[in-house]
Amino acid sequence: MNTKVRTAFLLGIALVLGALTVVLWLPPEVFDSIWQLVGEIWTALEDHPVILYLCMVILPAFFVPQSPFLVLAGIVYAESMGEIPGAAVAASAVALNILWSYFLTVGPLHALADKVLSRFGYSVPKIAPENYLKFSFLVRVTPVLPLCVQNYTLGMLKVPLHLYLLASWTTQVPLAFAIALTAGAILEGNLVVVLLAVAVLLAFVFGLKWLRKRLGKEPGMENLEEQLGAEDSAESSILK
Image (cartoon, rainbow, N blue to C red; front, top):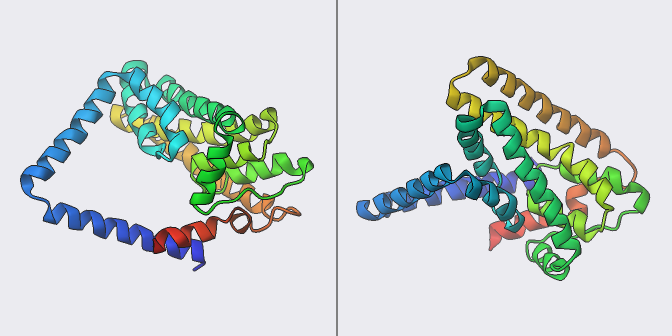
C-alpha cells in the first residue's frame, strides 16, 4: 500500500472514530439541535434552488467539497425539471466554478492561492508549455487532488484558458452530470434512468482511470503526486 493510500485510509478511520465519539458523548439535546440545524439548511437549499446553485458555483473554490452539493442538486432539480435537465443544470454550476476559479487564481488572488497551496503542502511543478494540455488532463483525472487544488494548480501555472477549459470541462462536467443524474433518478424511482446513470458513471470513472494511466507514462508526466507535493501534503495533514 503506497503512502497516499495508507494515509487516506488512516485519516478516514480517524474521522469516522472522531465522529462516533462526538455523537456518543454529545448530550442528546445538543445532538438534536445539530441535527435540526442540518435539516433546516438542507430544507432551505431545497426551497431555494438558486441559492443551492450559487453555493455550487462559489464554495468549492474554497476547499468546500462539491460532491454533497451535486447529490442534493440532482435531487432538488430532478423534482422540478426532470432527471436529465436537472443534472445538466447541476453540471453547469461545476463548469462555472471551474471557469471563475481560473480568473480568480490568475488574477486578484494569485498570491493567496500560492500561499493556500503551500499551506496544504502542494506545489506547482515546472511544465513545458507544449505539455500544458497533457498536464491539465492528468491533473483533472488524478483523484487524490481536490477540485479547488486542481483549479489553483492550473491557474498558478497559467495554462492558457482554452486548454484549461478543454481539459476541465471534458472531464469534470460529464462526471458531475453523471453523479447528479444518479441522485435524481434514485429520488424519482426511475429504474431505467438509475441503471443508465450508474452505467455511464462507472464507464466514465474507468475511462478516466485509463486516461490517467496512459498520461502518467508520458515523458515529464510521471509521479504527478510527488511533483505536486500531494503525498507530503497527506502525510503532514495526518500528523498535525
